[in-house]
Length: 204
Image (spheres, one colour):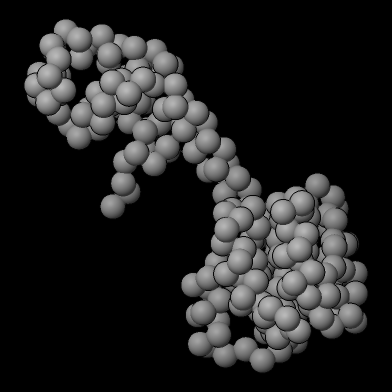
């Protein structure tokens, strides 16, 4: 099931969007009359796409965008406004909006943007799942095994790691074998991929 949340204080606009978006199979559309109402329920909502108006009573759409950052990749926001400008569009994108749509918009164009948002959401969910799995595996390592892994990540040979940790090269080999078993990998490159997914290796 795909979930779409329409956050707009304009009742007829919410109804129009719900009617349009509900034509898609396996799609549940829910409307909110304000950003405050949406944020009040956000913790209980299923991951989905958020169609977000900018000018609303209470917190604006841009303020809601900033709040949504704490939800990680659970939601993909699309900003919709009748008073758009380049500066607002840039601001929205910087704060996590996938796209910026000005009213009036073509129905086909909006549906294509929503489809793209769901692809983005699914990819983000897969990345988050891989990250969680990697962190779970890393979490099973002992402190010494993690030290050895960090040495391997830095490209240090066993002898150097042994010197830095004040243990014997043979002990490093044992820790290395143990961490490979716990990570369920057969090669150092596989271990490095898990370390990268878990955030132990910077992508810079």
